[in-house]
Image (tube, rainbow, N blue to C red; front, side):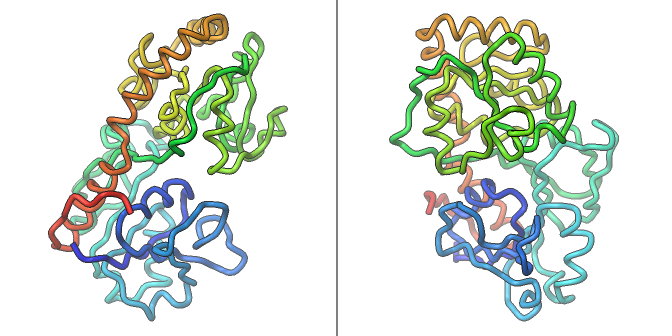
Length: 323
């Protein structure tokens, strides 16, 4: 499969970083000042040379093999504002990162086209969205963690990793976090964490080593897609405690590779147990590590994306190891 030139957007920085492990050139739309969604090649990610900054005013003058949308505004507005008619006729993929927001089961996806491939990042997302006539496939996450970082668990506290939790309400489990923190020592990291007495943002590259000191990670989110931070933590051997909602019950085998429940009280009891028993925490974390390493390996992710690019461009996919 030849190297493709793909136009996309900087919607989720960590996802874009993992996507860029595929052996293609990703031209990332940017605007002056780098506003949200138009950051281009920016931030603290260790971008390789295949991630290329693409000012929006230059898009119509460049040649691409595929257009890769990552949110509604890009598909509904940007393609008409920045792309030529010829570019709009190129092979198109839309990555749906999220669960349906307006209604959990009856929301129609904004892409309604037989010539666009709709890629869901979890099977739960694909199940809940009404994708209509649009062809769909699921490409589950793939992540990379530094091989030198492994679970230590010496700090007798739990860690919660969520950006802007204070402003995102019940969907992200702000109330669940507050309830659990009354009984269990928990630290919060992420953008805006200070407003809830948290530590603040930890850069992506430093997060695995920072996380490894904690006894466990707690994910209080009620309703969202499967977070990359969950997989990254489990891949270094962190025990995971989480609500048994969305895709999470398929990732964690309760009591063996983590703890999942819809009973917050039961989750609090599990957290207390992990604090009392570091040997149990290590065993559970190792079981989870093996489970996610098999399912969310970066090579599988790259192979799945190569197959998707081949499907829309008519090229032959090869199982290429991560760049």
